[in-house]
Image (cartoon, rainbow, N blue to C red; front, side, top):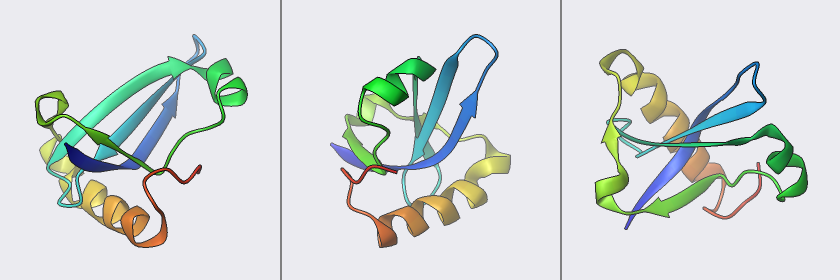
Length: 84
């Protein structure tokens, strides 16, 4: 299992939220989509999560630096299971 940290959340017009989690080096990402309503009824979003190595993809090269900075900040300020 690999720890990843929330680095981005995007809302679309269909009521979906795309959560992007990244490793602290910003190079590997895990994306999760869920219904916006689930954020309200499901207890929120965690600062991080443990995912299988095979569930990780490569971050877009132009986002690696930003993702690394945000993942490192989240890791320093939160536990994986903190609600953010």
